[in-house]
Length: 480
Image (cartoon, rainbow, N blue to C red; front, side, top):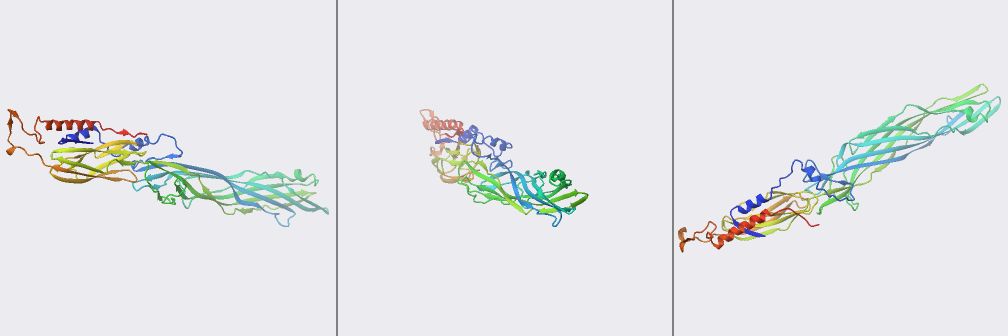
């Protein structure tokens, strides 16, 4: 679209018709969040503009939680103890750990070096809890001699419950819990978990026998969780080009090939390790016909074999809206324009993305190629017409480059080559004297056309037309 008029009227009309959009308003982060896609999608987290750089950074909050009951590698039987004693017990124990870990943080994508990725953990964003419990079983053996009679008995001590003896531990920490990890350590005091009357248990088979079986238990437990990596994958489950994030403050990247947004799958991967010691302290004593037998109280320590399990969370999908700039022209030829006149061309700027597009336009020859607006903000899926005015101030060929810089991740700088030719004014009558014709005034205006002539009326009409055009420029929503 092309129009001609003299002086600065065209540029002034364009500037007054469309207010200039400034960069980074104070509340722009909150405002930009309202521009996010409204339709529900398959993603778990929608990235919103970062508070400190809302035009070139987006941050998607992440929350992970996993709970699992893990049997530890301790399924132990003491055998008959103490060896060679007339009273012996055999104790069995199985240990398990009910573990829950929750983590929170974010995936942060920034550009124009598209796309740089970070995965900051949230302060106090981790919680690690562990309940270690056990099942206990017991058998007893009696082998005594009374008045020349041998008394033998072997059997279960059924009243030893399969108890829910647990060690509870919980701690909050700063996510993600990188090396050396987060360690929970707890120890319990001795706790009596069983007290059984042997007279009630075996008195029917051995008349007159009496005694008790008692069992005390204590436990020392250590559990450690460590995050080894934050895995970041594309939707086809391929690791991003920059690899996983593997340390505090670590960074990654993903190749961006254009488009209104990207989606990435994120998950922490780590391990949980358990070790500790179970202390069994049995007491076994009987009496029969005035005689007594017992085994001394003894701590039977059972060390847990070191047990380590992978701890991989379910992935969260993050949707990152991005700006995406397209120009309808990369070259403009203004043609021949008379010195003192102006030619205006419009360039359509389209934001095909899902985030606010911030645009700054400059030229290396602002004297000859004037810009209607230096800065623009273009909403998602919106088009704006931008005016460039060629106003030669001397005869000759002119060429310049108009730079369109924006927060588009893959094309932050685009160029428009502009050129035009300035042509001299038509010659005035010799000496610039007024020429009378039929008693009227035939003097020339500064633009070279006689006042009141058809040419002068044409320039004026062109000026009015362009002003009307400029006043009519508005953002247009792209067709769906």
